[in-house]
Amino acid sequence: MKRDVTILIALVVITGILLMLRKTQEVKLSSQLTASKTTYALGESIVIYPAVTNLSDSSVVLVLPQPGSVEGIRYPYCSLEIRDESGTRLELPSLPSVLPPPLLPAHFFTLTAKQSLPMFPHGYTLPPIFTQPGVYTLRLRYDTTCNKERLWHGPYTAAEWNNRYRQEFWTSRKEEIEKVGRMLSTVPQVSLLSDYLRIEII
Image (cartoon, rainbow, N blue to C red; front, side):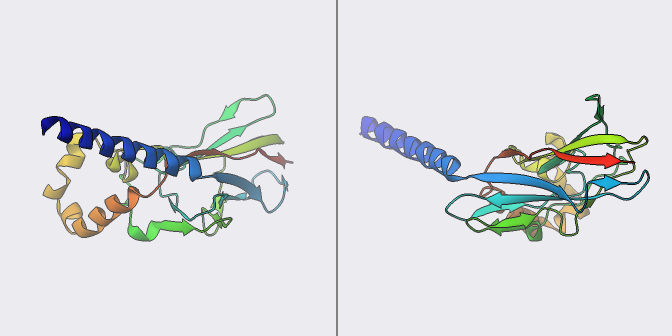
């Protein structure tokens, strides 16, 4: 009897692993980074348009970038690599030390097969980091490879996350946060890297 139970548990575990591997293999996504033009005057506002395309044969659930995603303080990471002509990487300005708002169900979206969707509905306006004329290259990484729910909401420690419902800020959103946790289990873990976008500052 004990042997039968052990075998059954092993089969369940193996089946779960196979299903997870199958799901990972079936998810095929790509990311794109575009701009309305490639030449800008020094000091001119630059808006870029990150997008993701589902190349799979089935729908995929993803999450829109949130405040702090570009700066790498919460998932999904939507980080930008910007380099000048010498290859030197330009650093984006850091965010003020304020915790970002919680992730909400409305921030999830479903990409049907072969569908593309902008990750920022109105584009992303670059901060004023170009101080000299020249040619710059930009590349986007969209990353969901995180299995810690707290890091989708902000840079919370394990202790802070475990004690969150002692604060009114979290207790008033408990039902919504729990729904987000369930939705996160449907998001595939991917790290997408776009092609380079070349822009010139004159």
